[in-house]
Image 1 (tube, rainbow, N blue to C red):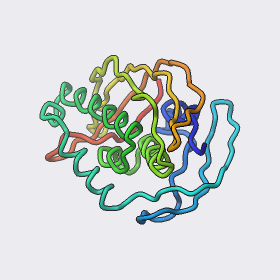
Image 2 (cartoon, rainbow, N blue to C red):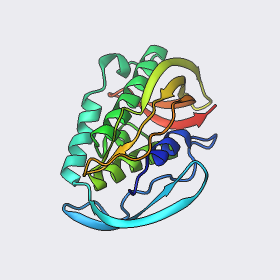
Image 3 (tube, one colour):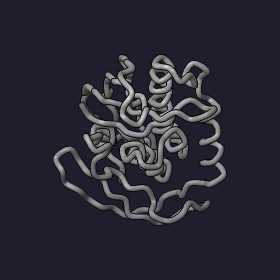
Image 4 (cartoon, one colour):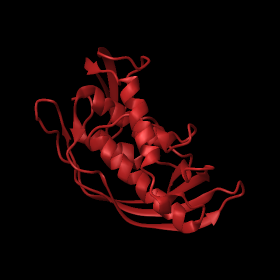
Length: 211
């Protein structure tokens, strides 16, 4: 398999003080087109070993990606649009609901729609969704259970921070034939999420930092 359960674990745990580690799963390198494409996809395991496999993958449909992007923005709850500490907490919870759906459906474009382009960790989460979609595979379980999202302070740029405590559940990748990869272990996640305000649709994730 091109995306393993271990790669899902790394994608969630790779958030560093710089906002993201080395990409754990690379999306197809060609521009999105309809149909299929042959790509090489690299995965990194927790032990650091990296392997590359080549296979036929389904390229994202630009229209479907645009629709998923629009739906993610339209689905932001009213409470998550408020530029208040409570609104930031609600948006953080919604963002990880979208991550869960993007990996289990999978859906391309939704995570990116709720992120700033400079958020490296967000790009890694989106890249995993793209790779899963391309393989016609999906995560067996919603990967993240949010325990709490507590608003912190505003930083020097006026951005709002939120402290996220969550559980990464035991998981596996299910491929198009129904084959399951090895199950990963349960682990705890503690992250500082930095959000920027948007005029009409709440917030966007600008940085995910490990704590």
